[in-house]
Image (cartoon, rainbow, N blue to C red; front, side, top):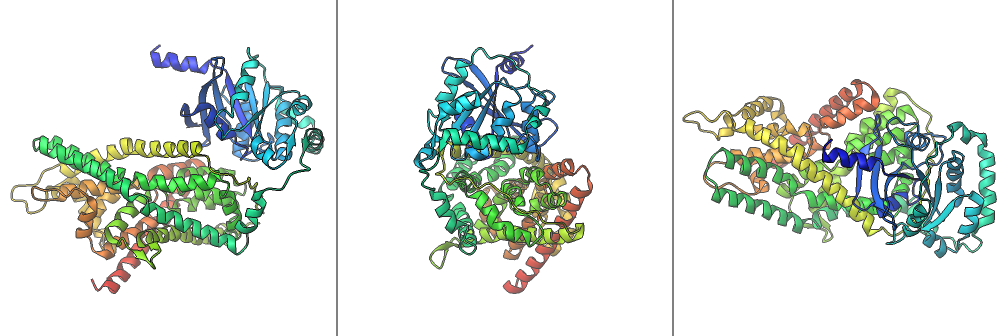
Length: 630
């Protein structure tokens, strides 16, 4: 057995602590506080639900594993997330270790909702600790909870935690040390949960609350006052639209300096290699293939991080569920419910988690329609393409002295994706048959300031994912594209750049017959092919193609001036329209196949998106030609 295998085996023998609780109780914040960066994310075997596991060491030096279970309101599962939590706690998942200790995290400001789950888990007979989280917020609101009396009523250890503050987890760590040595206890059958009716459970919750909690002096909270404005039927949608508009303005305005620094760094490396390496295939691979390709994508990391910074802030402060509530009526007009908002919002990061999040939608047709329109949300992979074309063709100037024209165009592209998704949903709901619309039931968490540590961890995860894609998928495709673009070489007496005669050049010219009506040249056609694997690869592909298309001794170091000089404005606008509807990447189609159990729907998705993309690009190109007189 190798060292790595021995390490993994040793880790698997560590005691397992399972964190579970209602959504928005601070469970994940406590997980981050315990583990820091020592965590890994995967999927549960056989399903597409995220599994987060980490490690921590107690004050007595004892190492533990900790598992952050999906949020659940009850072990009587109604969603796939709740089913995973139920099966892990009850030890019913093959290959999953039953937890040695269950830490049930509850929101001290909302015990009435949280205690039902606590009582259900208690009936399974597992070692338990109750983490009374957000006690600082409860104290500010005048809510008094007697933790000692609560421990007596529940018959388990109760600790107070403030997961968002440094040291807020120490009482939990001390409690885990006090339980040592841990005793292995098999969970009772799940039928034990049903031995007490839901009505009797709720009566027990009310009795415990009366004994341990005093909210007579609850001053109410600022959340209700803010919601009077944020959820107003007129002001609410206006505030949401303004927030989204400001986000896209910031994506361009704030990213200029870091993008210029990355671009300068990539250019410097390219110039150094060009100056110190002899001309040949290796230099061509490094400068034109890798730096021209992967470097062209890397420069857009600041814009992606800025976009996700705002999404994480809105999520952390509690605004996103309000956005779902506000959009419920609008989405109801096309036959969807506000439940589809979270999956569609997730699709702005990537369509894959959005499609997976649709598993929580109970109505089968609602779920299918949500899956089918999720790729129309403008995912982060489109952002490098948008940013490149906008920077090259849209002037960097202010509109009305307040708004960036480039940010305004980017905002319009996102809106176009949303509007088209609603249109497709309207059509599909009537094609697949009408359904009774289910009312939206959603817990609205209390507002609170975003926590810098959680933001930093979230941005680090996003940066790591992006850099991993650049270093694996994109880099591999760029090397492959460089090879196809380099061989075979140009014949004697050639009048075009060598790439024109390469395998990639031949493919591009073959596709050009199909795409000439929408203004695409053979270089763009080449970039569209690897872009099927991942959309942002198209930027790297253009970088490689145009780097190899240059003639003469000097190679332009930036892709923007090259395409600005090579393309007409109608072509650029046509490509923007294409990417609003661009046929989905292969990995997304495979996830749709897994979620729906058939290739019928991935094929339908690819077909309708290609038709929309071609039609939109054709109309955009022809109208732009008429308006510009080109």
